[in-house]
Picture 1 (tube, rainbow, N blue to C red):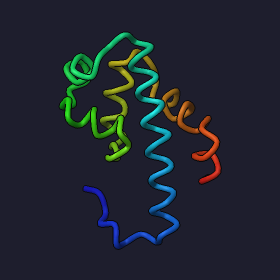
Picture 2 (picture 1 turned 120 degrees about the horizontal axis):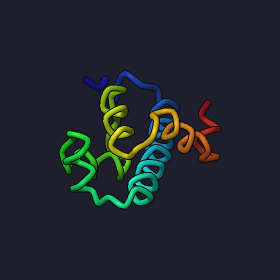
Picture 3 (picture 1 turned 90 degrees about the horizontal axis):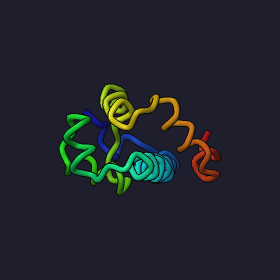
Picture 4 (picture 1 turned 60 degrees about the vertical axis):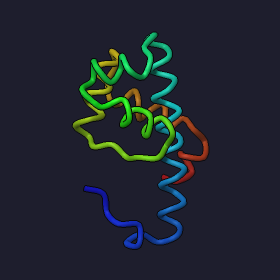
Length: 95
């Protein structure tokens, strides 16, 4: 379960937005490269379509277990998804 926002500093909240946006772009690009739509990815990965939508909008975080499920459905490794997100300059600046 995610921690309530009030437990984070303003800087941590800003970084979270940047990181989620970078991961969202990485997921959208991976899904599109795989030729899947959101519904298909949801079915294959076991996540709900609404969860896929929230992740791709950067509105949600994802557990490591679910990231593995998404990566498998996309035919890639979780590290490849993270590497794509890390390639985003703004996200890299949060490290």
